[in-house]
Image (cartoon, rainbow, N blue to C red):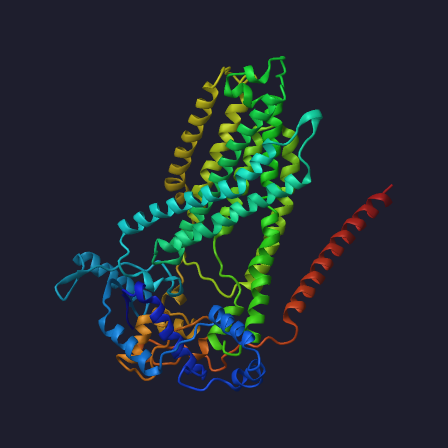
Length: 587
């Protein structure tokens, strides 16, 4: 069918994006910089603003923030993009599209037997694509070797540590100092204001790590979306775990100073300041209570409830309303630019990290008295039911589109769960000491044994995940109907292809090769601009350009589901009542 080449244009990504958007505006019939703007932009609004230069300046300030005006003429922009297309170089990777999967497999097997395919004095190697066209970052096909990605990852860890330091100094230290300097005389304890403040400190810390880890994942310049999402999930989990460790260390130090200052004693009447061993301090009643309170507050509601209550407001509702206001007040913003202001947030795999972090904190509570456990787990159950319902709504009603083509994120989430299981074993070893389970260890030696158990479990668990778990996996079943399906038949149903999602390929088709019709770049929601040209591998067409929803679709779906649930509950209750009645009627 053809070849879609990866080009080196990461440094000129903005230029390429503007060129594609100009082409899209022309295809949608929207004015460009050489045309006159719509009447709405020059009519009563400018007449009203003529008298007040201050309001004009405000309007210009808003436009500079929300709308990027292209002052160049069509000729200048065309000349610039043509020069770039002629000078840019290709990368070492390309996607060869075959008519069927069988033809692809034969080509891969043939290349493997021959040791590659000779092409212009070079040997080309072939391998099956492990991704979908709309999960490829074409702008990262330049100088993105493994060495550079590792180097950028190390730099990213430095940024994460700086963000952690910022959160510690700006948010956490002032809170810790206020708790430390509180007057604990006569049994007084910090009030609700301190609890609310701690919750917000935790939420802000998690939010900072969320944003920094996302930026670091982009900075590494992965070629595929799934690799970027897996890295983001790992970084976010590790970064938030650092937050938790820092909090517990600071809480332990603060609690020790408070207990020592109040002249607490142990169960045996020994002053707390005379207790030298860490394990004895840790297992004292006062320390267990303070650390358990902190662990409980950190998880519920600071981590597993409050952030998810704020998330739909901050990430969905507020951006949507702001986008509506911006688009309504500025008629210069049209077409695809207006669509981007109205789009919901993109789908990402950070929820894996959120749940793993909740598990880590839930396991930590097992090191403390059992009175906190059932309350915390009931709170977690309620929170995760809410998270599930919110994600259900978010995916079905807010996310514009998402494609994840492999199981990388899921596999790495299983790896991130290994330390969670190791923590459970470490807790069992620590708590079973001197409790009649066959070992009695004094001092800090129990800590060494617990840590050793943790690492042994992690090693065994990881090896089983690699070698044992795949033995129980289901083998893919053959599907002759799909195996014999051609690329053209697939592209007729799916707009995203290896050609329509490659920006440089589309621009070269339009401006260098001048295909008629050319290969058009696919923007999200703009499938109607694609045109059929089977000679260059373009088969998709959408004459309607829209998918109308008849009636009140959302409300009808909700009411239908509610009626179905009510009907099932009523049926179950009726069956149960009839059974009980029959039992009572028997002599």
